[in-house]
Length: 471
Image (cartoon, rainbow, N blue to C red; front, side, top):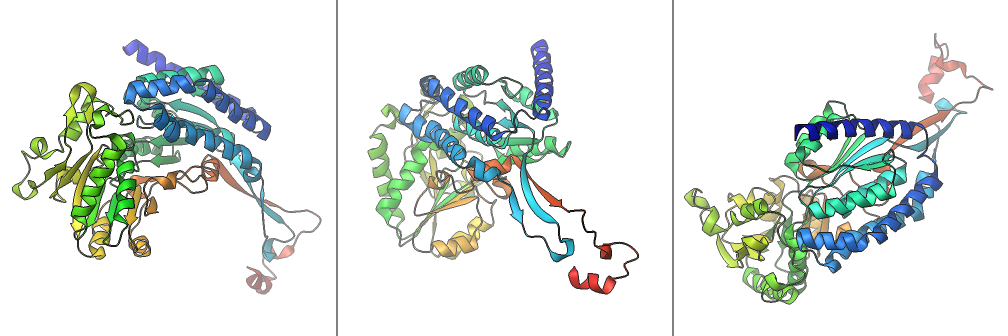
């Protein structure tokens, strides 16, 4: 085992040095080359589409339809968007020059940051590895990719696809657990792009700080879903049921907990259960489109949130939650049914960390001010969802990475919108032009002609009275 790790450490170091040499050769700079590489990635994905879909089914019980809609199609769309707009994005930006530096001209050029590291999670293992890669290719960077070990079949297919498509001096990929992550983070990169939990995000940021390496952290958090008194409850229930069922709630922007106006709580919960049955049938375990929990450890953590198993050691003030719906699980299949918990204390464990599963704790409110105060006192979430007619009020009094009014999840679909967190839920954004900019350095350039040399800037500042008027 130690020898294997030593070999991996040597491979990472050697490959990174190759990528540094390749980048400094200027091979990645030409726009035609970048477009060619984006097209190669598209072709590779088409070639491996069935293998990737099969692997997603094996690891997560993710249907082809859901795999295509939530993973493959998003990457295909991202590539098309970059191919369509890359020349415009890469074009120098002309800027006005102030009188003080005339007759100089000013512009901003976009340069690739260089050698980048992309570490992906397991929940959307294809999309969240390849979507950042599109930005790296588009901007002219090299990249080393690290897929998640928790989805071994997907990781194996991705590794085969990347190695058969790109030379390792340009795009490389390594598999392994957290020991490999530590080896990767010990190296000096020009950018680290990490998607995962806030806990691991802190470790990445700490490692990056040793080299002052910039980081993009796409993390998560407890994204609230607010159902107001004047919401269209039927539409809200349908959209919320879909958003929580998607990937069995293992989505960084899944609605994490419900805050429902007390006057509509009972009606909404009945509609929510009804919509789950429409989406997943009366027995979600037999449904083709309901994903399984990624690991036994993750399932045990989720089961621990259920009141019959997770409240034995809680103080009496927190032992109040009850299962309104669901709560069924099958360890052999790593299955957990969509579950609603009512009478939940804000101090309960299920309200302390991101759930990342199909469990919905329910809180109620009387006045909208209670909601904004509750959300504002907690860590800033990656997403916030509001159903009702007070959306503007919610936007003014809360902060989150992204927001949907009368919908969930869908803000991630728009390539013209930045996607990213704020505070504990992450830093940096990507998707579309934002991805290109994330992997680029905007370099300020002032070009001054030599046919004239204005004397006022030189010591001993004889024209100081004039200088004061110009600056």
